[in-house]
Length: 151
View 1 (cartoon, rainbow, N blue to C red):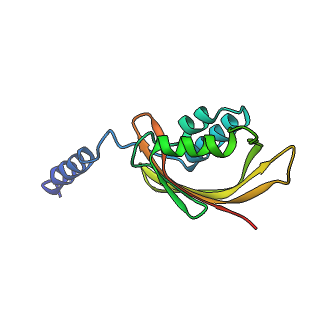
View 2: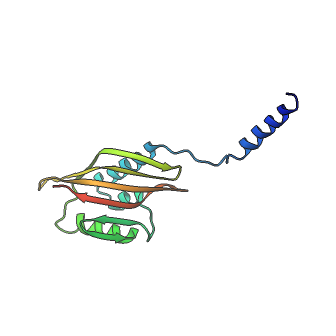
View 3: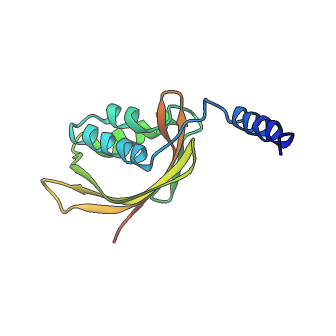
């Protein structure tokens, strides 16, 4: 028994040293926090803030909605501006509900949920979404947004 004890201690030390001290833990709440920050920026009528709070600022970011696929942060921002801030357009009040965050690992996850826009001059619109997230050094960012319009 005395000869096996040093071997057990050695195996425990080697095993614990194999675990990276830089492994980051993640919480689904972090994904929800991004959605809530976007919701707040939208309701402050800040399209630039809405984008910056959540979307990956990259030409590789994707936004799929209404039968079209917009690739890239800047084209997605321009699409939002044309749809909600152009002359005669109304942003409305945004609310997210039924948020269902799921982690796929320490640096990847998604959120499914429902969105609704309430307007002053027309009936509300709503739909469903799936947001795919990656964690970057500056935080969680949406790398792909698939949004649908409800009936």
